[in-house]
Amino acid sequence: MDLRDLFWPQWAQARHLSEIAQTLKAGGGRKISPTRIAVDLQADINTLALVCMSLVAALVEKGVISELDLQMHLQKLDELDPEVDHGLDPDLMRGALGLKKHESRALPSRAKLPKKTARGGPVPTKQEKAR
Image (cartoon, rainbow, N blue to C red; front, side):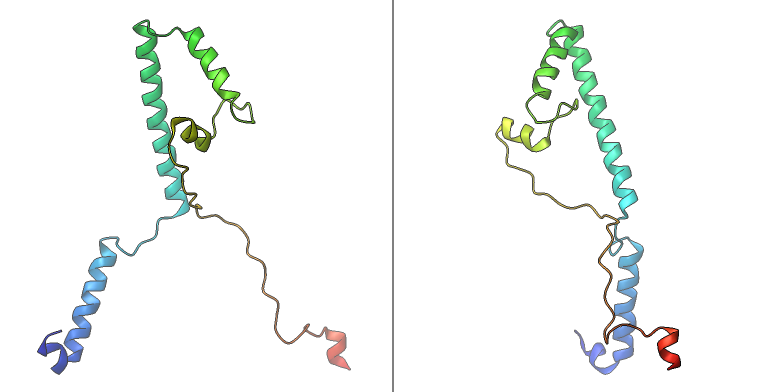
């Protein structure tokens, strides 16, 4: 705080509002929408799938592993978790690799919140009002 802020509070307020506007313009106060999160997540999944397929193709091409061996390994690993769904639970995979369990962060959802009850009891119907 400098002396101008003390003697001219309107000037200080205008400067503060200008700083807030610049922060909002730069995106500092903006929340990420659930749709944007889903799009970013899908882009990450697509990138990882491309990397995995590139690695598999390179291993098969160099003769390090055959496609049959790869399929057998995939089937064997898929049976590690309770569901045979051609996927692996990430926490199970982290445990097998000796990594810490990932902290679960809930993504924004459209879950319905319980309705609030009105205070003061039930609203009288038209018949009750006529009495």
